[in-house]
Image (cartoon, rainbow, N blue to C red; front, top):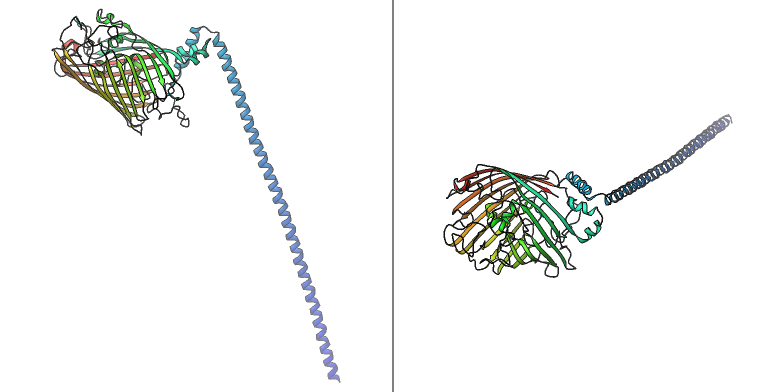
Length: 549
């Protein structure tokens, strides 16, 4: 019994202990669950707080960005407004200046235009993003500093080019005066230049002749200053870029100075040279009309009147030359022709020229054996990569009988562009006359060159090379070498061969002024041709200045 009680007591104690432990575990589990729930609530609250913070930060950033954007927009609007105000003020000031200039005397406007352009650089780099203003490939050269921006071709404007010329000071003063807009609309321009030079030479004048430098041209008189040319152009350039209508142009040129001796045509004011041997004189080397017809291939230009002969790297007009002096080759070939000359652009590679004239350097009304129906055919080919140009043909086609400068001429020029700073041009020709006579006759009392030293067939040939190196935006360096063979003296009066070697610089200090110093060495191989026929060699330092107006 006692044992039974004891077992009951032991079992009861165990059960009470188990229940007590179960209650404690349950209480511990409940507490732990409570703690976990509390922890989760805290984390949820913290997450919500972070979300609210992130939202606030996002809203703040958005507000800041919006504010920055608004600030930028306000800044842009303000800058645009200020720019508009500045443009308006500039336009108002420009209008005020224009209004003021309308009432200024012409001389005052001209002086102000000179001062303005004297402070303008000769060369301004073009905008690389600007569209090509013409329907043909871009010009291969920069002009200035080079004399021309296009490949060599004479007797025509550049077909495919709009023919726009920036006004020089004289034209600027006209544009800014009363009727200026009418002048602009007419496209007629008036401009020109003054060209003077000086030389120091190893040759000297003599009692027989002042022309000690000859056959160096144009500065034939040694050791002196010369007024080479004062030139005035009145011209209108046709727009040969467009293809929808016929356009027209003209040029009337007037020249006074020493250089008239090398442009004169027998019958055009020629007594001042041929009879009086004047060292300064007047000439009109170009008097012509241009008619542009866009419907023939890629365009045809018809030039009617007196022109400078189509071939040649050089030209009589000072700004068109690469150096101050001229090659012997250029000094003794045809100068001017009168007639009708066509230039037809077949495509971007080929251009064909054909013309008919009354001869070479003889007026249409002048009696002379050389005044006869004369043909001209020239062809220009430019490579597709715009790095080479070939210009060749027969410049004078008639019977070649002895007359005033009635030489026949086959001529060609190759120009190669190495890059934007270096290019070279080489020209060669062969000329001849039949039945030449070594003294003046009743029919041929004068010669543009010289009378030959023997009668009969009178040939000569020559080749010249120019190579140019651009050394600055507004300057380039030139090397010239040539060989000339005057076989019977019909050009220079000496039946001998010549070589000539020159170096020079062309520099534009500003838009209006060009300065061209050069060193030159001439040599005659057979006869003594220099220093009035007493020396084989001649050194000369020559400088010329061109002032545009």
